[in-house]
Every structure is written in structure tokens, then in C-alpha cells.
Length: 368
Image (spheres, one colour):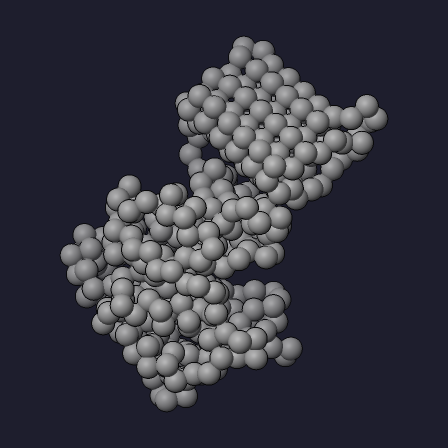
């Protein structure tokens, strides 16, 4: 199939499956992830996992396996059978996160002899992966990896290229041979299972997908790079989540399904989801206000996402993500913050300064 294949043709082919990894513990986002899956933290009021699932479906992949761990039930509840995304979803339990190659190994019964795309569930890529899948189908390499030029490649897995082929992968090298780092999306032929079975656990006790790919490289098998032109964000840390939220809010179209009182001001792109209310407040976009969320006598500044059933009253907040059922009352300035579910933030008697915080679910904070 050529690179100009239409979406319908890719679906009709039905050969390529999807594998989303959602079994990690999310240690870099604690305490948020003590009580919830990191892949379900919302970006512009949509769980980050959903962006990956939608990207697979958009590329014509309808059969998707999701590798799940401790948060399996939460992810099952959020995604269901996949039908509302246009996919059929099968859940693959992983008792412990023993590496990306281990996730591939335990998914063999689902994947069978199909080529597949593996997508890390906490990654975000602008522009989707349709072009990637088309290249994979058209050229048929054993492995196709996504790469992105980064100014600090030593923090990532790094690929060295020669003549348009990948010749070496190094994990977090002290002296990187290139500035091309591995993005969390990979395309594999079923021959990857041979490599996964052949490698040994790394020093940290995991089966590394970079080792499995290098095993194929060392045996002369074609590993093809695809350099990502758009944005790639690994949302595993708070600052990256906030940056991803900023990027997505810039891309979304404005919709107004909620209401704003006559004494409120909505400036720039403000997205009001169903049942939301803005009362005697100023909201300066880009901002998204979730279903049944109320903003009263407050200022909500740019690049803020208020999830569903939130109350912001007599407060100022900007460049932040607030999860559901949280109450913020009397906070003079909150910025650059990720605030969990069922949190209560209240003003104390002393005059508050600007606050930066990362709060887990069911927290209660009095601001001094």
C-alpha cells in the first residue's frame, strides 16, 4: 500500500494492531498518582491516554490492546470496550512494570502474527501518527521508530543514524552521538518477539525495548527512523503536563456550551463545557472550563484547565490544571500548579502570596 492510502483503505487492510502501555506507576507525578492512573490525568479536560487511542484510530488501527497494571480497573472504567473511540479494546494485565519489552512479550496472544504500533500511554504528539503508519506499511521495515531532535538528548534514549538507517541506540548516554531521541511510539513486525525472547534483563531488572531493537540492528535487520516534525511531550512530570495543556488549549476550537453572566468578561479563547457557569468573573483564554464547574467572583488566567464539578470562588488562578470535585475559595494567586481530585483550598486570615503546588487527591490546604 502506498503512502497516499486513504483512511478507509488502512482500516480495510486490518493488519496493523495497536498496543498502548498504561501499566506504569507514575512515580514522577506523585502524590497525584497515589490514587489514580497517570494516563488519566486530563490535558485540556481529556485524559492523556485518550489522545493516544484517538491517534491510533485516526491512523486506521481499530484493534487495540491496553497493557494495564495496578490501575487496571480505573482505566477499564474510563475506556470501556473502546466503541466510543471507534475501536475494540482488549486489556492485558501486567503484574509488575518489568520493561517495555516485557509488555510486548506478555501481549503476544493478543498481537498474534500482526504488525503493530506500540504507543506509550502518557505520550502526546501533535499531528497524530497516520503518516508514520503509512510509512511503516509502505516500506515494511522490521522496526520503525519515532525520533525527535532535542536540545538535551542525554536525558533520553538516543539514536545514531547512517544512510537513513538506525545503526545504534543508547539509553541516556553521557556523550550522545546525535540529538535524535526516542519518542514513545514504535512500529514492529512480529519478528520483535524473537528479539524480546533473546535479550536479558538490564541492570535495573527490566527487559528494555532498546535492547530488543539493538538486537535486531546487530543482525542486519532494517530499523527505519521517522523524525517527528511536530511537538512531542512526555507527560510524566508536572511541568510537562502543564506545557502539554498549554499546547492543546492553543489547538482546540472555541465552544460555548456553558453560560456567563452579563457582569463577566470572557477574553480570548474560552471553552465552556456543558453546565459550566461564569459569574461576575474574568476569564482570559485560552482556558477550558469543565462540565458543571462554577467560577464565581474570580479571575482565571491563560492556559488553565478546570475539570468537571470544580468550584473557583473569590480566587485567582492561571497556567494550572485542576481535577474534578475540587474547591478553591479565597486564593489570591495560584499559578503553575497541578491540583488533584476532591481538594479543598481555602484562604487563611493572613495575606497570601503567589503559590505553586502539586496536591494529591483529598488534600486540604489553608493558604497563609
